[in-house]
Amino acid sequence: MPMKWEQLLSTEKYGSLRNSPDDRNPFQRDFDRIIFSRSFRQLEDKTQVFTQAYDDDVRTRLTHSLEASCVGRSLGTLVGERLQEKFNVDLSPYGGSAGIGAIVSASCLAHDIGNPPFGHAGEDAISTWFSNSELGRYILDLVEAEGIPRADLLNFEGNAQGFRVITRIEHNPNQGGMRLTYATLASFIKYPRGSETKAPSENKMFTKFGFYEDDHKSFQEIAKHVGLLPIKGYKGCFARHPLAFLMEAADDICYNIVDLEDAWKMHLLTFEQVKFMMESVIEYGEMSARLAELDSEILKIECLRGTAISSLINQCMDVFFENYDAIMNGELSVPLTSLIRRKHDFRHIVDMAYENIYAAHSVALIEVAGFNVLGDLLELFLGSLQDVAENGKAASSKSQTIVKVFPDYRKYVTPDTTVYQRVLAVTDYITSMTDRYAVSLFKRLTGISLV
Image (tube, rainbow, N blue to C red; front, side):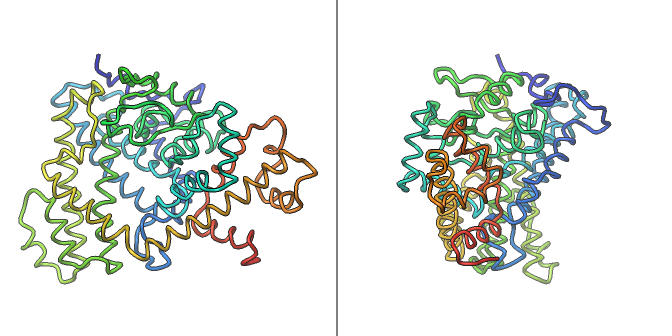
């Protein structure tokens, strides 16, 4: 049996016992709750690819998320229109096609909300600390003894942290977090499995995991409520919500196309290189005449960027419906962008970015900083909390002093607190930091700076 839209588009709010009277579309409320949240606001000072220390015109996680939400809204609205026209799906209870656009827009807005400081290098830094640090390996042994999979910590995952933020940390701890609709939450879940769940290796939907063991019950409730299909033969794995494909596509379109623009600003790519690659994914229309009317390279790149994004939105919409039955039956196992008509040209952009942008000197400097700063913060906070929890007043003076810096530290050094809860408290705290605050706190804790 395929998934059903009337269940997939649930307007009920996770964790809420009642629906407050509000004239806004419930999915627009989701968008507003995310955008006014502290976690979303902190994305303003989290690195996307390039740090603003080099150029304040490049994207941060915040601007990337806003741009992705715009693309997601357009893509979702177009899909909604065709669902009504060609598939007779009644979307009137959900705000029509705009309701679909609002769900995808909200999930795009939140898609990076769990990412730590220093971009994707921050995720690697946390994982590396647990596998390479003597204290990290000791903590892993303790957590495993508590029945928690080591993979939860060895493979730190921003997507799983984001799920934790929106369902638990923000607004109403342990009562639904932001209390978003089930439809938006399910669309947010890019990898619908836990950290240690066996998954089909050929399925790109399971290359990472989407939630920690601590949040397993939350995921199960959401999956059941919207009717996600279980993957046969793989207990604990579920098919994606159909709109999660659109969220992923909007993200892929944005970071691949706009990273070209930022790379040009950072003088990593020439105008001709960026022009060639953007034109390669544009399907219709001759760009030469349009570009000739513009008198600067920046205006030409902005024109190319807008046209490329528009073309990719339409290609992804077509692919969604070309694979509609497979999506609704939980059988599509690859991203939409891997199936578009200009997929080879789009793949070339991805490959070029890894070779010429993400390996750039300025990007590598941020990654090195992330490993040092986040690794030391983990060592200091987790080591001190664990020392005080195990030894009480016999803990070192250093540990007893450092724990006082940690928010609500008394909750995490009692005999009732598990090591796993202690670890999550530390990773929750560190991943919430902005790049600037993480560096500042690192300097103060290590004596490099006192202010």
